[in-house]
Length: 124
Image 1 (tube, rainbow, N blue to C red):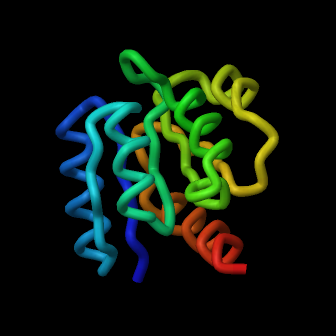
Image 2 (cartoon, one colour):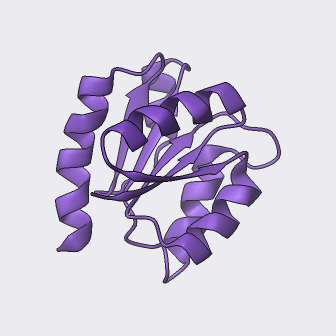
């Protein structure tokens, strides 16, 4: 299975998603905010990142920009999640074939479908 980095400033969201993904057989690493995510992404080398959009200090869009500028994380697939209006959120997303948007509350079937799309692309 995959190593997944879960990033959200809500510790309950990180815990819920981590438990679900661990139960599915994935290795999960949690991060509490943007700076923590950037650090963990560099030294954990996750196969995929599930990232909250709205976080204090560094939001999800800025995290994506920084990850894409780093050779170590430039091809890491990202699922950006948010309770924000889908149209507003997706307009802010950079053109990137390895980034998808998922609305909160999370639809776990859709989450797993996105894993199926993104994980093979990252290994290509």
